[in-house]
Amino acid sequence: MTIKEIKSPSKNTWAAKLKRTVTAFLPVDKNRQGKCIRCGACCKLPNPCPFLRTDEQGLCTCAIYPVRPLNCRKYPRTKSEHITTDTCGHSFE
Image (cartoon, rainbow, N blue to C red; front, side, top):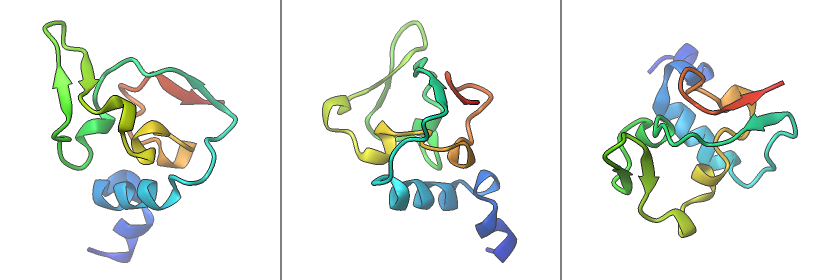
């Protein structure tokens, strides 16, 4: 892994996951808008989550939703951590 890959988490999902885990205790950016549309894209970074479930309509659900980790609860916490912009229902001003 190069220094450039580490500094660019959007191109390196492992680095992005590590960053989200470390920063999960920080507050969510006040400029975040929208809501989860159950696309499941964030649950597949960098590997599919073992608790991800998909229904007949293709909507995703978390099997441990009430006790899911902070990095899942807060994704995307900031614009720089938002690497699923193409499918996510959240956006930033």
